[in-house]
Amino acid sequence: MARKAVKLASWTSIALAASGGYLYSNKHLDPNDFGAVRVGRAVATTAAISYDYLTSLRSVPYGSEEYLQLRSKVHLRSARRLCELCCANRGTFIKVGQHLGALDYLLPEEYTSTLKVLHSQAPQSSMQEVRQVIREDLGKELHDLFLSFDDTPLGAASLAQVHKAVLRDGRTVAVKVQHPKVQAQSSKDILLMEVLVLAVKQLFPEFEFMWLVDEAKKNLPLELDFLNEGRNAEKVAQMLQHFDFLKVPRIYWELSTKRVLLMEFVEGGQVNDKDYMERNKIDVDEISRHLGKMYSEMIFVNGFVHCDPHPGNVLVRKHPGTGRAEIILLDHGLYQVLTEAFRLDYCHLWQSLIWTDMEKVKRYSQCLGAGELYPLFACMLTARSWDSVNRGISHAPVTATEDTEIRNNAANYLPQISQLLNHIPRQMLLILKTNDLLRSIEAALGTRASASSFLNMSRCCIRALAEHKKKNTCSFFRRTQISFSEAFSLWQINVYELILRVKGLRLTSWLSTLLCWLFPAPH
View 1: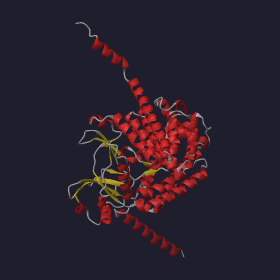
View 2 (view 1 turned 90 degrees about the vertical axis):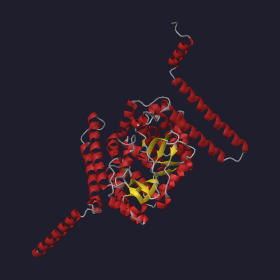
View 3 (view 1 turned 120 degrees about the horizontal axis):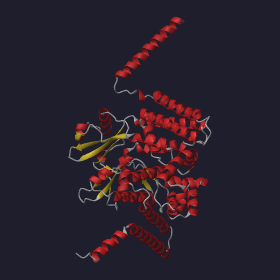
View 4 (view 1 turned 30 degrees about the horizontal axis):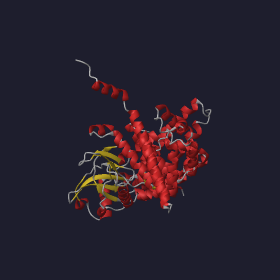
């Protein structure tokens, strides 16, 4: 019996050694791609984070200065562990980590600042893998399709990477190629996340993170279908064609599949790169206004929203023909389609916030699922303190003190925030993420919470609500009345904006210059 056990152990050792040697010598097999490795790593990380929270804060009085300092350290340790897990497991994990990193005013700063690096640490597929995907999907080799194809990608993301290439007819294109293993791993990764989130809920009942899994379940299959991305690009280009400052690269359908997308190649600088704008004489305030107009139109008027406006997906340039500033909108995989009821309630809510109608703020926040947590919901939506919301968000700019207060509150009210995110309509989750990404761009440009951005939002809300009323009435007189009311409201906003601009002028300096011109000093 002992001899059999020794023999079995010997053969097992030989098999394991041979397997290990094969994996080590085979460059195309990565241990990270094996389910057991990925599951084991995710379970170990979740256990380590949970244990840290359970033990580190247990003996410290809740709410004390020591507790707050210690909690910040635990947040940071946990965020780093989570970031390492995302980088190791790649694909879906990086995508979810990027989503969390974008929730600037909803999660503790230790998490968002740590996870933001995932936008620049996405994995790259090898050229052999790129050739394989193109061969499988397009049925041809690279040299049959392209005169040239850059080996180094222009950028790599969690699900795909983009290469610059030249077609055989001379057109320069951007080629988006999906990482080959993402499709197969995504459904298993989401199931694993669901199990881990349920396990964490058993340990910490006050935290609700199932909304994160639900979003990944719904959106990942859409993002992995590049034909869907191409259709989204064409739809938004058609929808916003009246904006001459917007450029959406053209799709080349004849060479596009679910895993390969060919687009017109367009160059520009990232929207948060102020140095690039200064070098190219692009007006930062103009870009900020254009961005606000574009997203207000998407959200309030059309209900079809590009939900991944991080700086790598929003470029700016001087139009080569006209010399005007232009925004280039990329990566159309993630869009949120808003129902009419949601869109109209959201319009009413923002109108109430802009014009400080607190009764309606409460009513429409509750219509959108906030319940008695409506003050917290209003703060999450605006990234302003409750005091600022009550005084009027369009009346005073965000101060550094208020910004710090909001970020600290994200840590202090994390259980309530997680519960709220679990109860509001799923449409709102991507809108909140989009709002935070846009705010981070405005903060980088120094244009955050400007009065003009709120006025542009208000214009879109007025138009959307008026259009809805006109659509639901058959009376010509009533439609005319609604049109006049809409025109008058828009006129009021224009007058208000003019007053703000006049106030902003340095009238004293202007009058002094005028007086010097009228009454020059005698020589």
